[in-house]
Figure (tube, rainbow, N blue to C red):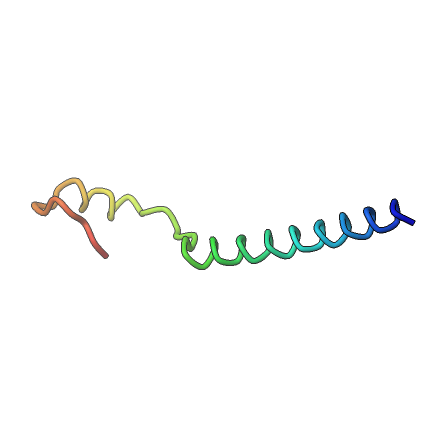
Length: 56
């Protein structure tokens, strides 16, 4: 009986960890969207611009 209780609790913990992991992944992708790499022209503009910060 006690072993079944332990197995059940471990299963619940595992399910909770998986749900939390999915939420963290969604939050990470929301906060850090994948942007395409800069083109050659944009790189050249960054290198030749007078500003020290390049914001687009």
